[in-house]
Image 1 (tube, rainbow, N blue to C red):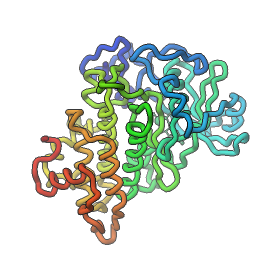
Image 2 (cartoon, protein in one colour):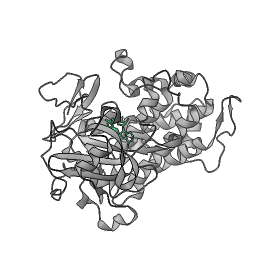
Image 3 (tube, rainbow, N blue to C red):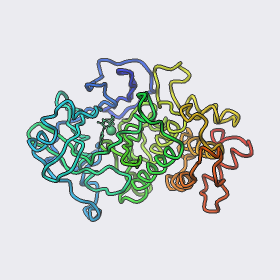
Image 4 (tube, rainbow, N blue to C red):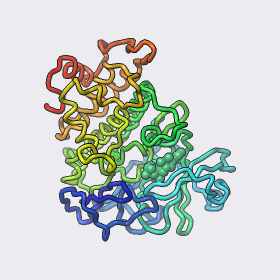
Length: 413
Ligand SMILES: Nc1ncnc2c1ncn2[C@@H]1O[C@H](COP(=O)(O)OP(=O)(O)O)[C@@H](O)[C@H]1O
Ligand SMILES: [Mg+2]
């Protein structure tokens, strides 16, 4: 695995021979295949057509539809196919005023599809490179099979000649990163209650993938730009192009090429290529830290010691007097002190170096559901209910002990 900076975004580079070297920050321009904006990840894939995709026969391959039992399809609706002309018509021929964003896959447009009378988001695969073709296949296979209120819905796709497009439900508030970082002056700052609601909803989406789906799925690309927000900041996970079917039988991990976004990638996975459900928990912890602190997972504009969010947070976790320093200054002090301690403890557990020490997603969901149900009223400057709820999870009990007694924090475990 290599790690290099690309237009300010540091990405992990996929190692096709499945050997992994320690991350370093040296640019490797010869290897980089950049997307128009600077790719979040580098893919080295064969040109595979979604209709011709063969059954995966290598454990380094991504998920394909054959990995998921047909019996599991019952609760979901099959993605529709659209012609290129239909999608061009929906976006006024991909007019610039319909453009809503761009990622490693290509450009995203807002459009209105006459056929189904619905506003949609249309992602067009960048045709200059083949990267993303495999992600396209996995995304269609994956999203056609899942169905959960916290996962973005794939409405359909177009695989006509060399065109590859994905059609999603339109998420009016866009991605979470746009609400946390580099805010334009007119954008509303996320308040504490909304942050907790987003955290709990994203955790529920991940719980569905880890614990409810058969076979379970490791998401592999959890980050703020993949959490899309609907009306009332209802969060949904998106971008399943990197998802992998979890280990089966007695296995605890899946061996795979290291892929993901720098700053979110669990150190154990980055070093060994062994992907576990706990790799997703680490990424979730990073997202939680971003929600609490307002800082980016990796920010090359900051002082070297503060560039990596987890590295910055680790020493602070050990000193409860410093917890208030971690709260996003944009909150202007409007957060419940106890709630801050508790959510920081959850984040600290999720980003522990030892994957086995990280909590299971079910415990994270229980803890965050409880925290998000405690509406904070900024005018009272107090959270109305303290954490004495008998239903609170193992995490809540542990986090309260660690933090309220001033004992060693979870990072020192
Ligand atoms: N379904 C959607 N609804 C609304 N906006 C979307 C949707 N999907 C993507 N976007 C917007 O397009 C941008 C690019 O998305 P994407 O291609 O997934 O790249 P990335 O995840 O790397 O940011 C996102 O940041 C988001 O703002
Ligand atoms: Mg995305």
